Length: 456
Ligand SMILES: *Cc1c(COP(=O)(O)O)cnc(C)c1O
Image 1 (cartoon, rainbow, N blue to C red):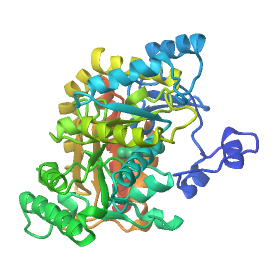
Image 2: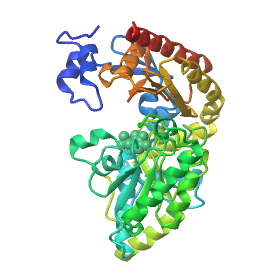
Image 3: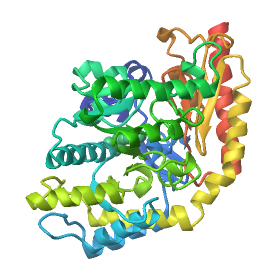
């Protein structure tokens, strides 16, 4: 029941908040879930209700909501140096340590790191680096950016322009020069009778065509998530990166891996580019980088881009870009601990150990006649609802089927997110087997309730 008396948390939230990425009819009908604390993978709201957060907050709270080591790392750093910047030749010791560590755990044998407060800003920063480089190297027309339909790269003006979602039209975006290729989602995008191999070849041919049409000398870079996250958890078709990377290389177009979700273990390896066996020129990291305990993003430049950019900057003596809180010492201290927790204290091992159970749970629910596809990698997965399984026909948009499922989950004490006609699961890496079963049992009750309601 919505709690709408004037002095409730729900009324106060509704009166004073300007909501983002929130379905307003749902909030009006149900009220805002106001969360006060967390325990492991659970969050607890102002009414004392407990929810298993199967979305890890927003993909980021991978160590759960009460990790003592992360809170201690923050406290120790707040006591020692609670803030500092990275301008004018100064930076904190923790910033130096984290950059070394990020290069060490990256797929690069050497590189350089630049910090932001978010994933969006990290994508913007990488874009400005490419534009800076183009002008410095005497090729100022190299400005166009290639991404894919359904890609999600963030919400700043440039990151929105990279993002391949229809809602950006509400802002008059994308800016000119941002080109969106076909989403490499075999189940949804394949033509009748097309094999997955042929589909991947068609994706590669499209890339060749776009480069020929636009002119390679006008393209600054290609940004891609290894698995598309907010586009609906879409793994690439088989052989996709192996097919497109040589084309990009041949035309001198850098490949930037947006690892904001995949990075630090989500797909079962440290990086999504490890899982899919490709070699990007730079990596964008955020979200799990601090296990969600601090806002931070990073651009990790591989050796070739780092050297070119360094040479270009030395010409003009300065790269005029940075955020007040870039390389914040508390964020860096937390990130150093988060990387240890994920890589050395068993979280990545747990992702790998839990993946078969997670996949089996998704596959079991996908037997329902109204689930068209389950897909995923590691501990990220989605179930896509369909009105007709054989023809893959979606439910009419006005039924808001995924919204209904997510709301039914909330009623069960499970948080999972609606995305298009899909529901998304990306639980914290600390999840146990029992909690995994709890997650699927609750989701199953929610799904069958909604589908029974629609057919009845
Ligand atoms: C979340 C996300 C971003 C944006 O990060 P913010 O911190 O929300 O700005 C960028 N890229 C990907 C792949 C993301 O999932």
